[in-house]
Length: 356
Image (cartoon, rainbow, N blue to C red; front, top):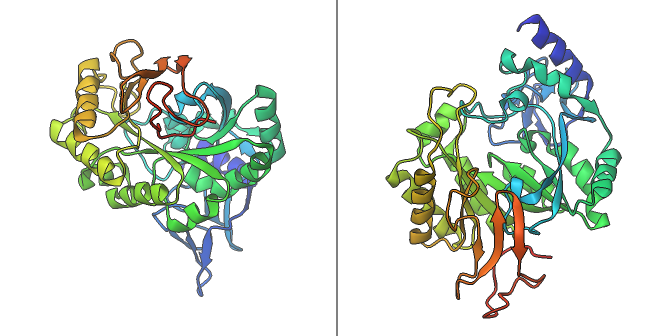
């Protein structure tokens, strides 16, 4: 580890608290339950994420800071069926349990794993859970989202914030890679209203390349739906990685098998991080992916990151009478005809989502 990385690790190790999502072992090691890697962490060692570590007394997790704190449209997460047009106060920390070569938040996600991300230390801002919630109130946010890095690995910190936010009527959501355990989802369930999960591929080999296991993500998608949380799924369509017609059909069919009411967002990759020689995703590929999703039976399919270039795939339609219900340009809602009951004002059919 280079000197700058050691300095950053020391700085981050001071901003920690005892972890609760752990299973102590007889030999003094602990089994971390925050993500599906289920790392066995021995004294003096770190988990795969690098930010959860054993200090000799027990496992510690990041605490008391944010590396990102912004008031964004909830559509930016993206959530299209969750309080359209509302503001989401979004916070993030540092670290991830995956190492995606196309990561577009790599400066925050790859901290302590890639020396190129060491400058992320400059983003650290000490805060308390109370201050995060106060920031949401000042911004007029109806939603608090944990995002930017992978929130699962800092879930105890997120729960401390959510516990304060929920009694104030603020809804809380995760923007996650979906590499969850049943234990972490059970811990989050009393406070979480929604979850956006990335489904990056349907190829086990592709997930191994990213540092994950496909089955864990598929299981999380099913479990989140079964738990009654609002769920939206995103696939970043990357040329020559997951953009084949067969793979897009496989993703679509899987989501339909869980529920045709899951909104599926196909979004455009732009050259970044370790894939700067890969071309940006063209609009025609997103349109093809969206057409496949709709043909497979998904009722709500969206194409993102290319505002104004994806035809009708920024708009929410009634799945029955096809009237336009929510019209968007990029992250901004131009019109919303849905009421809090989520029924189409034209035909009265229910539209899946959280509307009020």
